[in-house]
Image (cartoon, rainbow, N blue to C red; front, top):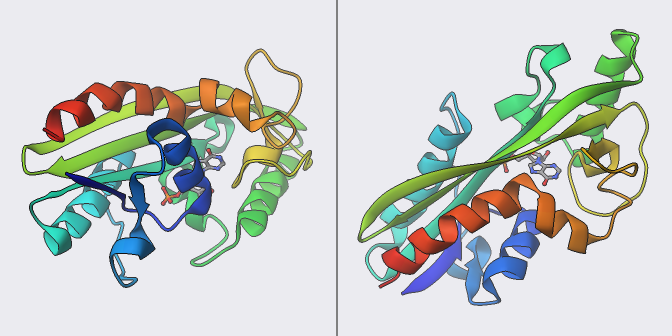
Length: 195
Ligand code: IMP
């Protein structure tokens, strides 16, 4: 059974390969780019949309894995949440999205606020569909610190730490992240579904 990650996000791919090894193929290694409209209202719904769309193209013999994730700030009503990738508009860069979040904190007159990342991982294959979740709690701050990771990592300080994910080693993130937790939950399901 061949495994592919239904995502063009290099940061996510790196983290999945840390966990599953190089055998997990990237989207652009198996198909031409194609658009998937992520119009579900939950992370799980969008993860399933992405995995199903690619499985429909590839068919039996493939196990398609997808990740839909984002950061939520309760002070901002849960924003950006499922809109994390396009918070500053369609096609916005990580830096533009992160800057919009910093601006939103400043507009509220706060320098930091509780926040959490959610990752929903979906797996679709011949044996059906599964979705699992993982979370990482912490806080967002109003300035960029460090350049490791991707997305909102340079402004996110995980609970129990004093530095952002932009400053901490990747080896820390792969142990404590929302994605790492979801990956541990999905691992036994992938073992079963790949048989
Ligand atoms: P998706 O590719 O539609 O699931 O969008 C995920 C978006 O959420 C990314 O573009 C990032 O902005 C954000 N995100 C998800 N996971 C992480 C992470 O581990 N670090 C930083 N940002 C993340």
